[in-house]
Length: 288
Image: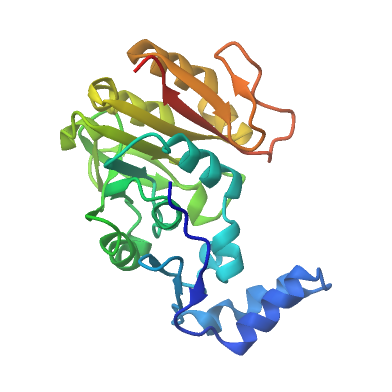
């Protein structure tokens, strides 16, 4: 597999931004408050980071959820990105489904670090990031941005925030009579070939998997990852065992915790007592 490790800033960031990020990394007292105070000043600043020779990412640094410099981007979910790319190593002409893409960082990192991705279908319902979402995904191999949420039904939904987190990244979709479109992944009828699916939808992971059952069943090979957050599992009463069991009912999978490299099965205790410790499970079909 071909990996691209060199990245450079294509367009600059403000001096104030670079200074505040430096203070944050040195854990200087008051630097977090300073960053919060400067966010409005960076509202219109969208630097473009070049992640490889052909992958770039535009980042809205004035948005608190995306207040990233190049170092932040390259270190984002590093264990997950490495485990996911490793699972793709023996595949070819992969269709990547990015479910809950935000501005497209996950897809951009995967496409910059491996050469297996032939097509990207990304899904992000939030109206707040649509312009950059479309720009970033459209620049990827055969990139298709879709302003929709994914689930197990066709209809509508609305975004809500949990009581324990006010960030945009914590928002989740609940069914509604009107609002954001919701569709199952199977509706896109990408049946056959090698597929990879990333699911980060703040508690709707099982519903997305249910809506992708035929896509998963008919794929030549399938790599899939989903997020596990104790607080989200407590809120939804749906845990990793439920997702693993449903995947196993479709076809055989092996599961590994990206952050530790530990191979797990449905009966293993994956959740911890730390309510803020999030992990990612990477699944790969077996017996293909």
